Image 1 (cartoon, helix red, strand yellow):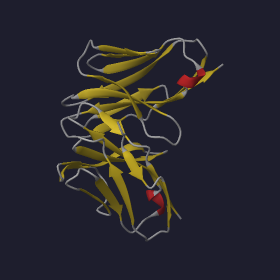
Image 2 (spheres, chains in turn blue, brown; image 1 turned 180 degrees about the horizontal axis):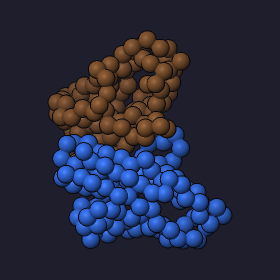
Image 3 (cartoon, helix red, strand yellow; image 1 turned 30 degrees about the vertical axis):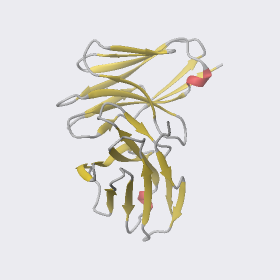
Image 4 (cartoon, helix red, strand yellow; image 1 turned 120 degrees about the vertical axis):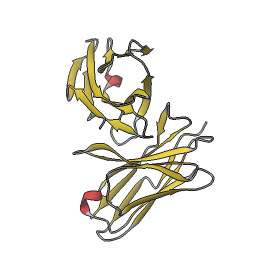
Length: 109
Length: 111
C-alpha cells in the first residue's frame, strides 16, 4: 500500500528564514508526486506535480524536488502570506491520491 | 474558467439522517473524486468516478455512496449519519489524472 510521511508536523519561521519540508514515500507505481497548499477552511490549492527522480519545479518562493524515495519543498525567504498547511500526495495507478498528514508552516513578520 | 463547485458549503444534520453533497467539476473534466478530511485522519479517499463509472473506492462503510451523471457532475450520499461523519468533504476534478483541482469543500457537522 502507498505510504506518505511528511515532516516536520509544524514549522515556525521568521520572515526571510528559508527552510525545507520533507515528504518520504513508498509506492508501487508512481503517476505523480503532488504538492498542495491548504489554508484553514478551504480546499487544497495545487502547487506542483513531479513525475520522475531528478525533476524540479519552481513557483515564486517555492521549489519542489523529487528523488526515488522523497520529495522536498523548499521555501526561500518566506513571507507571512506563505503561512499555510502544505500537503504532499502520491498519485498511483489506482485513480486516487494518497495524502500525507501535512506540515503546518507559520511565518512571523 | 470556473473552478470546482461544491454545494452546499455548510450543513448541520442530526444523527441518523442522510445527506447528499454535490460537486460540479471543471468544464471538460470527466474524473471526479471525493475525499474526507478530519483533524485526526487527514485527507482520506472516498471514491473516484470517470464517465459515470466508479473506478475505485476507499475503505469506508457502505453508508457512503456516490454517483456521477452524464454531464460529469457528481453527488455523494451518506446515510444514517454518525457523529464521526463530521468532516470537511472535498471534491476534486481531473482531466487525465495528472492534476487534481479541489473545490472549497462542504463542512458537514453531525449533532
